[in-house]
Image (cartoon, rainbow, N blue to C red; front, top):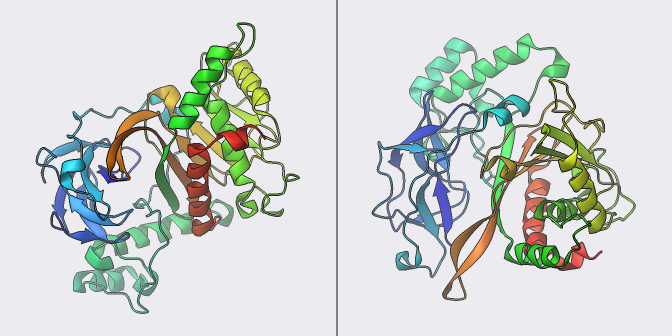
Length: 392
């Protein structure tokens, strides 16, 4: 299946960007982790790495370098071996991206440093001495920055001036904060999960449900699958203890969702061990709760301090992707977007599937990136074939 390349969000306030140049030609093979193109935002020009491997295909009607493109709009594809450009559907009509004001106000902001979206594959081993431009070397001397430990954002991983200045700014921010408030860069890993079977199962159960009982929802099923998958990765849990797959490991999940009462954070306790119908009933109570009458509706009475993971439901805001970084006390933040139909190639034929955008955000010093990536891929597998776990 072809991998979509979309305009990334390189900063919390970024709404649009311009492709400055592509580093690969159409038809050229791209390796995951390689710089693929550069983007100009309202603050800087940054290189964007390929999240997957494949052959670059830029449709004729795609935005051209210099065009202003909303965040999330499609730019190109990476074709898997054997795929042809003719298999790719026409480019969708560009839609402007609007971030809900309530989300910005209620969710924690990303770290201000110019971090790029991390590739969803482990980083390649760097050379012992990184390459650095002459100008960057001179600026490093002026600002007293040790560039030997930096990851370059220039083409082929070269350290350029913006890397030096970003490192100097980060050092200044860290020096101004107490040690307890110093935060490491935010890492975001993103995938699209195929959930056609989950959607069909939910529709069948809704049709068979009685009028007086809560109707099953995709969100309740997703929370159940998230919790059961997370139980197999004890290092990612809040206390980092327990054995993989142990049913004794409690998995508490904080759900951040828009309700008629406003934006609510609600803790779903022991979500992995409870039957699906209990989660359906609990979410129905959350959605039916009256307004609290207070100005701050971002915290429910349950609190959100000790959960293993926060799930942010962007579908309630009609959003596809937006990745807030973990707030103080949070370890993992999983955002789930709207389920949308999409064509894909499988076994030599074009099929229509239902895809759910998933983005997992964490801080580099508190979570093992490979464990996080393995959890995200396992979650995709469980979402694609959900029935065995939902019946548990």
